[in-house]
Length: 533
Image (tube, rainbow, N blue to C red; front, side, top):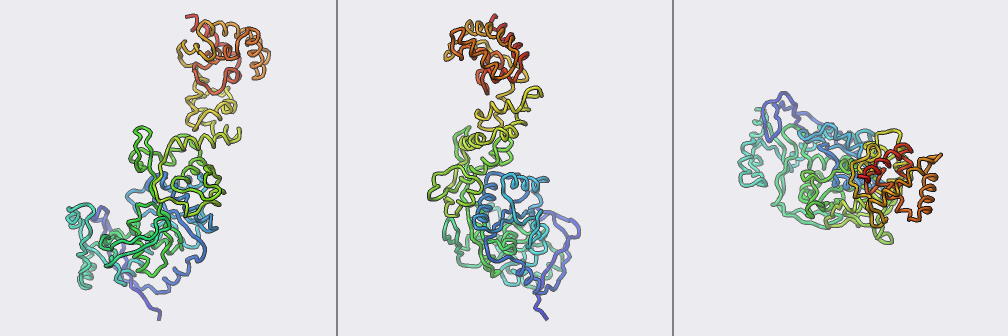
């Protein structure tokens, strides 16, 4: 007969009271014999050999810049090594779930070019890839830790734990339940008392290796007996991560330095199970250069700092964002050490963990603007027109005005797509403007000169048999030559009259062509009226 391990499973019956901030249940405890062959089967499923990385977001909000960088670095490590990239959804924090967050994660990853080999929507050999669908696994592995003496049940009430934390929110658990006898534990189980399962931290110290920060040793006395399984039967983030990373064969774990303090606990869990420890890759924080205050601080949604979705909504291209984010804490080596702009294929080729910095990086909106403007310039006219059309139509509702023609004026004149609506709002309606705009020292114009130029221009434009850019340009250049003035002296008043703005995308010729003959002449007449007083 095969050896067996005994696992305690809790079956949800009915909500009763609150414990540790979570809804509690009455529990029926059932002892079940689990054949060791189940554990062997789980181990046999694990892919061996080759690099396997994972991005494991919680669907509790939208993708912030730090999340995106973690996903990108994780993806690059896998792709650089010819390995597998896994997407796992960590939804055990049920109280903070956002309804559409999973769809946002999928859409963001795809938009950024971060495809995955295994995941909830594509399957794979080690599924399920959603943590709540793996619930049964965690209870079994937690019981194994109890059997090995590396974990224990804690029956302490919410009130008692609150008393312990009176000395401070970071006060450690006093291990009261560690001293319970088997008989006392059984009596509490028989009485249906709710409990959590805690990790038992051993004495001594824990040393772990990080690919960025090197060897780190922590005194175990600084570590708390963290909760592994909550009273609702769901695992905590830290425990589920370890179990899932092992069962999915993850070789490299990328996360922020805020998890460095948890790494010793992860190590102790791996050691308790007798599992191989993956390569840890901890990345320093992304800081934010606040343009309003000049202060540099850690990026936070709480402060209103932009998420990936915010940046897209502000008119930044995904390619530009991804390229810029790649350089927030990583730098290429060798011949390409000074290179800034990378395609995804070039990033895959160049990315090495050794290029990740120990120092924090600063998210600079001006720098992102520079990247985005460069990417906008490199689009083909057709590509730019497609990207710009929806932004143009926010202001230019009149279908008679060609969006593609307007886009052609904008490609070299905007840093981000959200600049567009304000730049083109004069097409649909001529704004109110001050007659002082007609005065321009560089163009050698004032009110009198401008009036004269418009009076000369209107008959010429009215007489054009063809309303094309070449025809308009030829007529105006010829008129300037006839009058003995510079082209700018003639063009400036016309542009002010048709746009009502000192700064416009495109010059007078381009604007007149798009507006059409009738509208151009109407606006020129209004300009002359304004100049006449």
